[in-house]
Length: 89
Ligand SMILES: [Zn+2]
Ligand SMILES: [Zn+2]
Ligand SMILES: [Zn+2]
Image 1 (cartoon, helix red, strand yellow):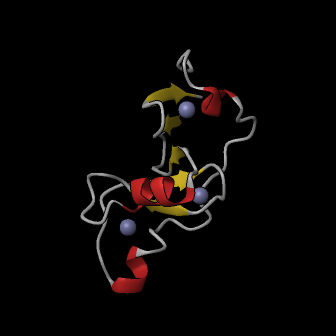
Image 2 (image 1 turned 45 degrees about the vertical axis):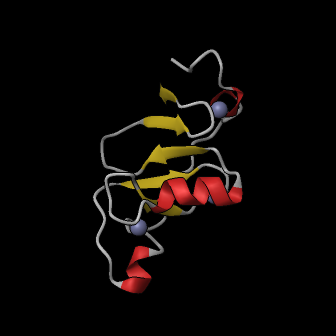
């Protein structure tokens, strides 16, 4: 159920999925990650806040792209960094 207060998640009609199952910034520097998240604005994939480099939330702050989806197999949810809203799809 989309959070009532988040217009960002509500505006998503098609969920973007990871093109490659890797963090595009960590692979460049040989870093590890824990979970992967895909930006719903530009379709790029980065690592979660449990990962040492937390690239997904940094990307959200720097780019202003608020919503990510989980790129983990079997997980179907969206998260908005602006509203801290979570929604399954
Ligand atoms: Zn939102
Ligand atoms: Zn983005
Ligand atoms: Zn990363």
